[in-house]
Image (cartoon, rainbow, N blue to C red):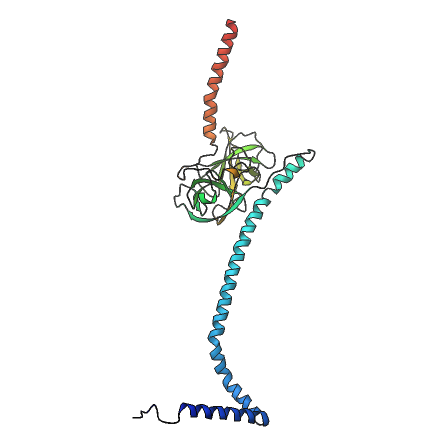
Length: 322
């Protein structure tokens, strides 16, 4: 029994009729000029339909292209940021090298500084403790990071590595009250020790006699003493010098050259002697107090003074007995 779906012409008959009509239309369109206007009207009618049919593909293609362009721009931006940080590290030493070149221009066969290893790191977290100035970076022991490793940004020294994990490390900033760094004045080479104040925008230069030549605006750079920070990197600029004769030392306040409150990308430095020590094992939870503490130095000096005096008295007695 035939159903309603099998009534009417068969599919073969329909296909044959469609082919005949197609051939007829092609022939008439080719021979007669009157169909040109009809073709124009049909094209005008079909254009919106074709546009709507192609619209999803166009949108998908443009979206993919924009996404690829955005990813490429982000990668290029990251690459340029890293290159800028590396170039800034080299620029920081230009003033120091220029002065050294002026002092050593008459010397021949002077030792040449070798290019040290460097690595870019990113800030992961900031210590929320208001009494501690520390940050966490995304490089650790697997990257060769070691305790007391110097850390800088594009403006100057930031601090040093105080704790090393497998994939991240903790940085002790210059501003921490437990941190101290030996520095010297770029203007006259006088050496000082800059200590943290607890504030990201200030450091203290302690134990400065009133007669020492230090002025507001002087640039302090790392002296290289202490075997922690390499020589010649900017540390701070003198902000205020207060000479109170009622006190034994002047009060000197300096401003860090590094943007300690806006850190994002950092640069880890290797000493020439440390590049061969990347494989040494260290306890990740061991702190690294490789900084000079002025109070400790003074106490050590005071303790050594009586011993020297006693040794001199003993030598004098032996000479009298002889």
